[in-house]
Length: 292
Ligand SMILES: [Cu+2]
Image (cartoon, rainbow, N blue to C red; front, top):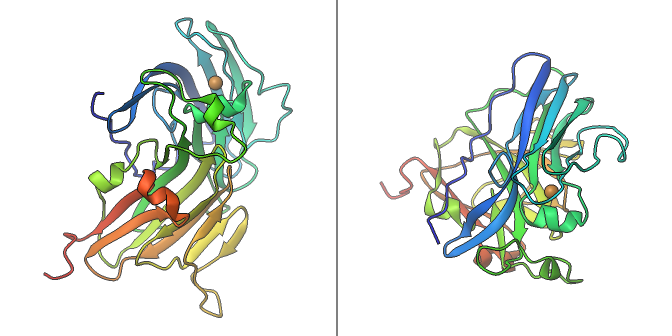
């Protein structure tokens, strides 16, 4: 298997303007999803997850979904940030077709998008998902670092073939890997660098398809958690904090914390059976060495 491609964890900047024309091109391709394992994945714009789309409340988003003739399967897209009829914008298109899916960002938050073509379980399990960030009224306050992390599962099929629908469909799903941004352990191999004592914001989404996340960053306390429209903010009168954020499949959150000293701060789901199966990354504060 070729080496995997690192997925940049930095959150993209807010798109400028009020109307956004965005191409989502479906690409069916090989991808190294963990060291030694290649799957024939289905993607939006060639990556798993697909691109992070960041807009603000009130914006109009015009998604141009394209399914090139070189693909083998029908595909579609479902934006959870939109309010549209399922049998209108979300219908599937065949190879060689394209369609426009226009929606208005009417609610702020961290949202999932995914292919909904039957069996949607397989299209999600094989890579067709991504994150939408809708900034709230007045925008998000400035912080020092912003990242986007999408948790998801891999149910490996044979080398070079799509993920296993049979394994994904098990009543008690047992993924081979649970990963952040598509690849097992990539941020353990290449830690995400932050400055010590600076404010870090992470947009987190659990794309599933089926396993819950308990998102936790070892050695930190979240002083801000905005999850599914419910907000814990750093200025709360009782000075409450949060240690782990439970995200069922398709739920998202904005979390914020600071690192107390130079060192390493593991990124995990505290559903700990998955930490040894790919769900481990690192934030590195400063040079990573607390002793210096
Ligand atoms: Cu699809």
